[in-house]
Figure 1 (cartoon, rainbow, N blue to C red):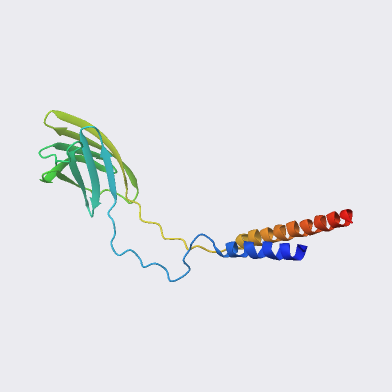
Figure 2 (figure 1 turned 135 degrees about the vertical axis):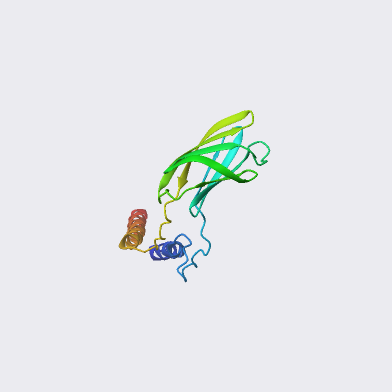
Length: 174
């Protein structure tokens, strides 16, 4: 087989791979999320499971039994951290709320003390109330082109080396 044919078939077999680059979509940008998700934190132990949600100017804590997922009613819930310190009031079975006007937009470690009947527990959670980061657009830089050009140069050099070795082998056979 002639070296030019080998080189051409090698280059043609590599070409389709040059167009696949990770499945990015370069069409219209995705629409912005229309529903904001409130900052939240979760903590659990063998006895209790708690989810704290920052809802405007109050921190709402949903408390249930870990094993059965039933709401814990009538518990004494103390919350400390992030500028908060106090007892949360029960608004419905398993739902407790405390004023959170003093909380800033940052990450806050929370300590949640729970006393319910014969059970008592201390839960630790981190409430991330930082504002969401803006999405960064993907930009193709010169380094991507440099990598592809380097790969093409290596392929051409490999093809040239094969052609030279093949030519030397043919001369040695005659």
